[in-house]
Length: 215
Image (cartoon, rainbow, N blue to C red):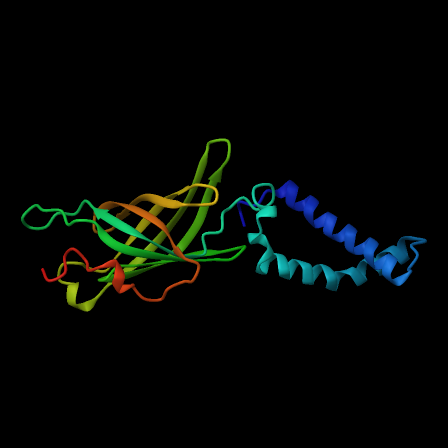
C-alpha cells in the first residue's frame, strides 16, 4: 500500500465516516446534543465502516471509479501470456528462439505476487511491488523470484534467483514488457499480453514447446 495517495485516501475515509454518521443519525432519529452523544453515535458507526472497508479492499478497489485519484495501481490479476527472449548462448554460440511463457499475477488491494511458468520451469516471487510516479511517467511492476527448472533439464538449466521489471502499458493495461537478470548471469526480454482473468496453475499446451526441447 506504499503507493496509496495519502491525502485523497484520508478524505475518502473521512467522507465514509461522515456519511455513516449522518445516515445512522437520520435512520435512528438520534440527536447530537453534546460530545458524549456524538461519541456514542460515532461508536455505533464502527461496524458499518468495517463492512464498507472490507468490501472496498475485497473487490471495490478494482472499480474504475476509484482509479487514478484514489487507487493508483492497475488491476493486473489473472494470467498473462507471451515470450521470453534470452541472451544466453549454448556451447555452439547459438541463442534459443523465443520461449513461450505465462505469468500469473495474484493481486489484492495490499499485495501482489507473481508465478511464471514455461514448459520447463516455474518461478515464484518472494518480493513484488509497483513502481509508480506520475510526474516521471513511470508505471512498472517489479519482482524478485526463485526459479525451479524441471528435473530433466537441470543439467543445462540450474535453479537460480532473479529479478524481473515490467513496464505497464495502456489504460486499461494491454501489455507488459520488460527485462530480467539472474544469478546465472543471464538476461533477457519479456513481452506479455492478457490471456484470461483466471490464474492458471499449469503451463498451457497450446502455447507450444520450449525451443530447447529435445536438446
